[in-house]
Image (cartoon, rainbow, N blue to C red; front, side, top):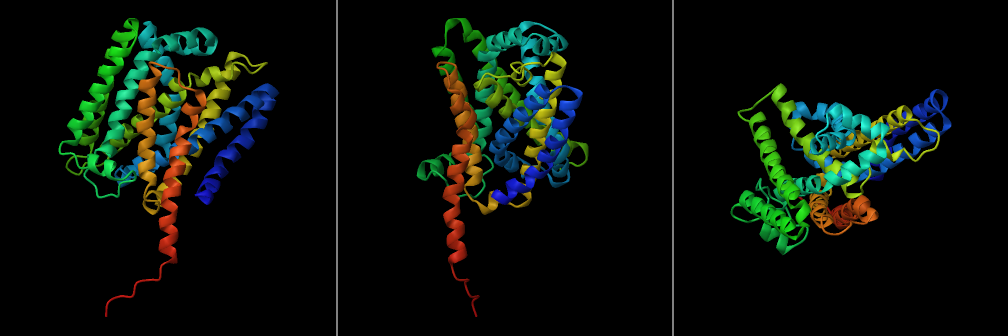
Length: 357
């Protein structure tokens, strides 16, 4: 996997090498330093999400896959990272989206307070939505042939008779428990967020199914790709904006010497560089068929989503440490990779089987 990562880093690092001097000259040394830090952080986080992205890219119909891996993925990550937090604040605070976006840049402290107030409902929405996405793997909704990574328990869950009903039932039960255990002041927000998450997931699946029905082609395939981008963009948003409590446009506010326009410019360019790396790494993993060569990598990618949904539900009751929220995906993907490598080595060491005469 190291050559894959190295080849994918070439363009993002080139963009960073070009943009940093430009920021230094046109803005300030502080802007250049902030851009470097933010872009490197985005690249590090993108490495965690590339494997799940590759798994989703494999589900997209071939004519739309190239557009998804080039333009759609970058735009989707940018939209979720930069626009979804102001949208959430606009809905919960009854503001216009423009006012919420201006607040994020001009008044980051007030925006952070508003986002924190909206957080319980958003987390409930994300927890049930991401659980339902993860349950597609856990309960083997598509009934694909695979070897269970976690042994007999996973194999048994993959054979349940009504997988979609099981996934929805567990999601509703977990949401109900989270509402019952929550503080009475936020129970209404949690209930609405959970119900909206279920409705959004079902609507997303209806659109995806319709867009690929009867050999659909053209713009419908791109619509299907958009549903996949929405799933992954929402996951990235929940992981890096809600669990760790930071918002991209506010993350550079502590850098000395930057005004709000410089902060916005640095944030947009930094996120864009990270998104380009994510798109290239995902495309490379998909082209190299990494998910087929490493048989448990897809399982690890799925369990990243499962753990994220559990952490989101848990975060409604107890604080989640930032380190755990930010890097648990690396541990899961690493374990999946390590448990896949011995098989590859053993296959290489085996003598070729002679064809029957």
